[in-house]
Amino acid sequence: MYQLNLISNQKVYNNQNISTFKTSSRPFHPFIKAWNSCSLTAWERFKNIFRCESQNVVYLKKLLAQKKINWAEVSLQNQLGTILSVANSYSLEAHLLKALLKRCDPDQLKPIFENAFDKIYASSNFDFEKILKFLDAETVCFATGCKNIEEKIQEMAKCLPENTLKCTVDSQSQLGKTFRVALRFFPNFMDTVLKAFSLIDAGRGPQTVWDYSAMIGIYFSIFTIPYSVFVIVSSLVSTPLYILLTTLAVIGTALVGISVYLKYRPCPSRISMARNLSEEAERGMLAPVIGRELDIFKMSSFLGKKKNGFLTNLILVGKSGIGKTELVKGFAQKYKEKKIFLLNAPELASANSYSSFGDKLRSMLLDIKGYENEVIFFIEEFGDAVAKKLITDVAGCLKPLLQRDGVQVIATATSEEYEEILKDNPLEERFIKFDVSVTKKQVLEILQDRIESKGNSILFEEGVAEKIFEKTQNETQPRGSVKLLELAMNRVNAFDSESYVPEKLKNAYETIKEQKKSYESALEKNEETSDFFNAISKSGKKIAKLEKDAESMRIRAKKIKCLIERRRLGLLKRRELAKGKLNRKHLSFLHWILLPWLDKMIKKEKEDLKGIPLTVDNNLIATI
Image (cartoon, rainbow, N blue to C red; front, side):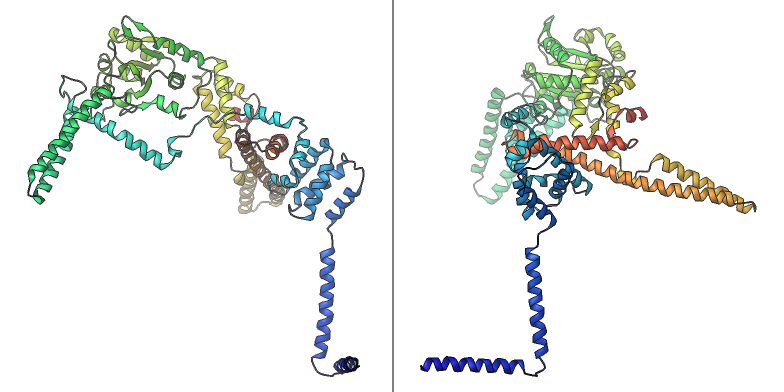
């Protein structure tokens, strides 16, 4: 009873307080009333906004509620493409799109995606792969139209080309490079010592200035350094006898090391003033030679023979630019039995060198002493050096090299230079002439290979190789055709869409400039100027229209170049995915959906922009 009274009293007290509060005339009462109404209004608005659904969400929910959907309807495809291009991957629209696309007919998925690509391209976004966020692997496979998707991917991985250039030493770790330098130090040092003391060529002392200078340097390194150590340590230690014995032990150990190295010395991989083509071919630094397989096979058959007890030496005779050096590089990639070193005869025989051609050649022979049967010297531009008769008699220096059991030699010369070699019977008898020529089929293969290698970043019209060959058929092949192709590719790469001015606009600028000059001349002569003024006014309107069209063309050209770059990146990524771990979703999307659309869009856009060098075509070849 007492508790009930307390409760009733408390209610009365609270009611009195509330009535007192309501009837109070204190100044902050209107503010609290306004604040209460404002907060309630804001809360209602927030609830409405939170519960509000966008038009796209409402549209997708209606589609999902339908039992049967006409997927071939154009308006439906356009609407879904628009939603795909603007939707956020973590929004309610994304979840509805994923559920809706799973119900879509497989034949109609690709048109929807292409419609979305068109919308993304129009917005200059180029983020085409954002559509992948709304798809799963099964939806992408349905869009490709392939039943056995895994088998198709395996076939594609086999057909895609490998990278032509392997990983070089520069891309490897610094530790590995340091280790290889350390391994090469001792053989290089020992070869220098043996060359200076002429221990390789036993029984012969130094005969040239180069030999004497090298010997003096080695004498200084071997004898002065131990002697300096001996003097320094003997000044600090009172027992120089031990130091003397230590020095003698070091010299004795060096002599023993020289003797052991002479017995087990390997064939050197590096020679001063020469390039090891075999090593470069093994490391993938030489580009593959196309269309010359038959010539390479003939060369290998010749170099394995002997003629009159002499090893066969070849001289490649052909026009300048016909590909004699490239032929030897291709031979170095196929022929693994011997090491091929490239020498440039005019460079070795030049007058600005410290030593003569004979001294340099003798130095190279000392490097490979004892391993002549494992080495082939490729003397580039040999005929040029012989014909010009540079500072030394190149032919006279080479005759001892071409003796019995000597080093095999491959030389190059043009037909005119070979006539000079024929005048020297002893030199001519040591060589077998190998005529080098190319056919139209080989030139087209070379051009097509270059086009395919650059096709990711530059567009080429079909049949452009034939056009290039027709224009350069009177020049030396394949150099003429390759040079023209390189010029065309450089012009496409150098095209700047930002500063492009059409020919019509240039002509309009020249016309209005002449009209202004005529107008000023008429003013000076006090003649009638109304006709000139009207002509200038018309030209100004024409220029304004042309400038607007030119700006539109520049924007479209820039977008096409972005499409080409996007296509190049897509091809690289496709190769990476196909050669590595298979990613069915991304790889299928790239190969069957995105890349075909990019090819179609690039072809469509570039046809509308004729006259702009965005592709290597017949018109561009004709203007060079």
